[in-house]
Length: 297
Image 1 (cartoon, rainbow, N blue to C red):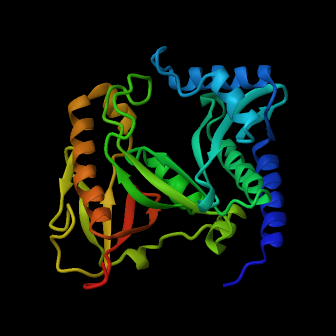
Image 2 (cartoon, helix red, strand yellow; image 1 turned 135 degrees about the horizontal axis):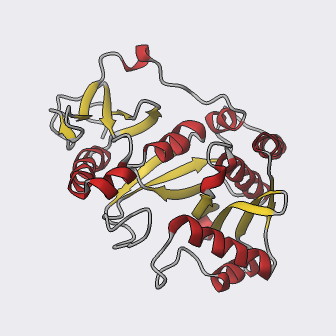
Image 3 (cartoon, rainbow, N blue to C red; image 1 turned 90 degrees about the vertical axis):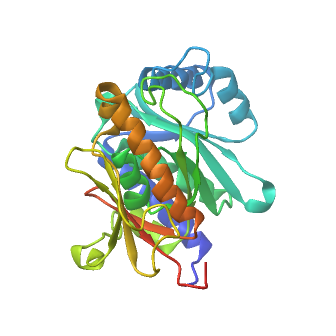
């Protein structure tokens, strides 16, 4: 399918403005020092980081914006309730990396994050950027659904303990495994998702899929016969589960949380390494993967 780039930019701007209006926010690019300091303080309130290792500093944001990179904020009136930071990748890739995005807990459920990402998409397309990559914790169910379902980004790599030890209010000492995703900004499925028409997995589509990782009766991970990659007779769809609330588990049962991390690393990481492709995330908590046909991996 051939897509008119200029049309893609116009549609992306329109989708971004509609998402912001629906969320009841104004999203705009930030450059001034006071604005950037508010981003730093917002992130500090969200992640409660180790003071020695904040997600960003005001000085770093200042340098990024001076170099032409992306920092945006979502405002409810005069209040900053969300922000997103990204920087350009290697010139030959015509791509950006979205380093960090966050929304105040008081604004959760309003789709502020969706508005921020659509603003970032429009901003990038206006500058000739074809794709944006970022990482997220694959154990956090709502983030998996947001990234793969609502935005139609697609995982490209499983990264083991990518950031090393992070003692903050979210990671809580767990290994920082991440999924690297790539968002093809002018792809038809991304445009549909931006217009709130994402592809939705149906029960019929998932019928007969092989469960590679499930949630056991005790809430722990249960590896199926196709878990870990390379152990099945090939073909068909695979399902990989994540727990309903890994952040709660990290607080109440750290051992169970670590068991889930190890299982997902083995199964999802192994399948991706063997050439399987994540095609979506079911809202009930399943990664949906397609195994490459035999001889084509």
